[in-house]
Length: 342
Ligand code: PHE
Image (tube, protein in one colour):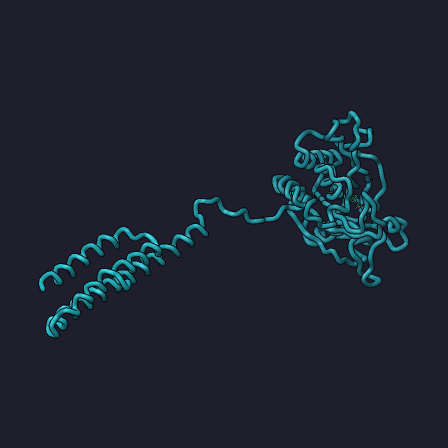
């Protein structure tokens, strides 16, 4: 019965060769049918046992059974491997590492922050100390120390939101002048950028009850309006990136003398007259002036020795000018489509 032993070997060799060609589950199934199915090669071998003696049956039956088990194991291994390859493949096609990364939304800087950053850079380069004040202030720092006593009509222009009779939301950032001079000895150079202020104004395209100011203060010996002018020009150069002129219009603020409204030459038309400056060539940006001697006295600085200047400008206005924003309320509305432009 040597032919059975040969057949077993032969079947195994050809199975191994066939198995190498199997590359998917269907092919594995066909192979299974061809070798292990009801009419498969192994079955046929078993059939030959029928005509054998009991000893032969025992001998070859065992060998054929071994063959069957070997084939079954090999097939199972192949199937496992195919499964594994398949799921790897699926994972690979799910994560295509060659694709560019998904853009991660990182947000945008608010126009006020952008302007704030430019102002910050300018003042740091000029060796100013950047300070912050309190949004909730007492009457003394918001008015009294700035030469605006209770009865003073200038209070009318800056009606606030009161928390108690003595505590209010600050109406301007000039409060930081007082707080800085209380703490620091001259010479001193401070700036407060993007300080939030509150006034009981009805809102329209250019007014809002919440707004932002930049406040600067420089106290030293022998300072004049010329120094103020130079500083403001430098500040505008930082924001608008080209030459601008400064113009002072005499004006009244109880805490400066002389005091002035400050205008810049229109950075868009260079004084020729355009829509932005309403054909005037100039744009008003805030107040400024030489610090009033009484204010210096209030914080124990000798006005005979020191003088200084201060300015307080609207940052919202600057941002609106720089970015062509027509309505101040847009800076507060928090509309994503607006903010995404910056
Ligand atoms: N604090 C003034 C205001 O808000 C502006 C100002 C600041 C004027 C500094 C003069 C000096 O109207």
